[in-house]
Image (cartoon, rainbow, N blue to C red; front, side, top):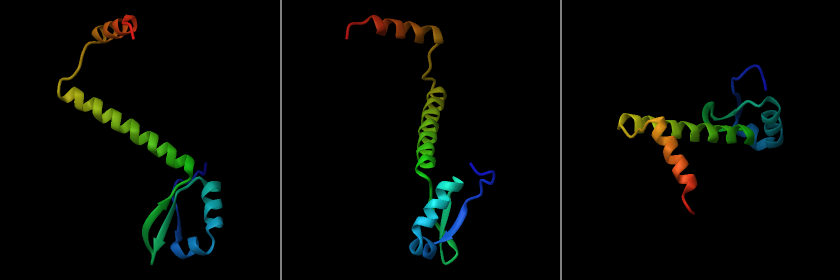
Length: 94
C-alpha cells in the first residue's frame, strides 16, 4: 500500500481515453481515484479489495450501531444469563 493515502484525481476524459492506465494505477497505488468532470469531483473508483473492505467496515458499523441502540433502549442481559441461554440452546433438539 502506498504511504500517501490521498486519492488520485483523474478527469472523466482521462478515464474515457485510457481506462486501462487508470485501472493499472488504481491497482498499483491502492489509492482511490477521484473522477472529475470540469474539475469537480463526481465519482470515486476503488480497487475491488478496497470496496470489499469498505463493505465489511460498513456492516460492522451497522452491527455496532444496532448494539448501541439496544443498550440505549435497555435491551440487555447479563453475561451469565446469555451463556445460560446459549448452553440451553445447544442442548435443545433441532
